[in-house]
Amino acid sequence: MLKSAKIVFPVLLGFLSLPVAALSQEIGKEAFQANCAVCHGTDGKGGGPILDYLKSAPSDLTRISERNGGQFPAQQVYDLIADAGQTRAHGTSEMPIWGNRFNAEIIAQQGEYGGGQTDMPSAQARILELVFFLATIQEAG
Image (cartoon, rainbow, N blue to C red; front, side, top):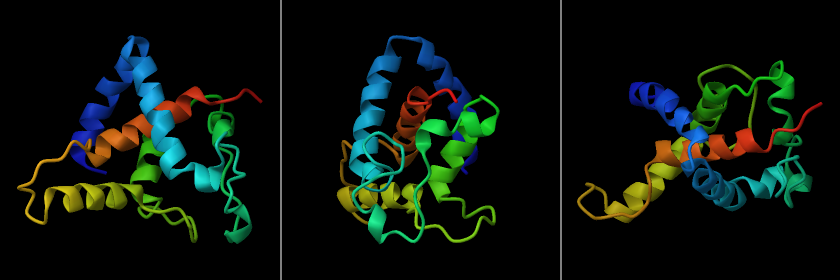
């Protein structure tokens, strides 16, 4: 993960206690529905419409905290979304590397040399919104 994200991430987590959290949650929900729900389902429990076409069932994203001793591992979730676990050996994964995809979308909108304008948030911001949203859908065991 980029060093700047490791610095910015804890600061942005502090904003969850502010009114901006509601907006962040809504943006994250929209990003989740647009990018993740096809596999993880609209409720995050793993029952997306392409489930029958996947090699293995997607994780139940509402139980991340439960699987981590009751704590939501925000940094780990960010890292997993950003590079789909490529930095650690965890077998094969059908999950896209969202950091690369989001960056490719930005480059496509700005042009190859980045001279164009884009209203698209950075890949880091998009991933953070997803992390914030996932933190809000955690269910107790």
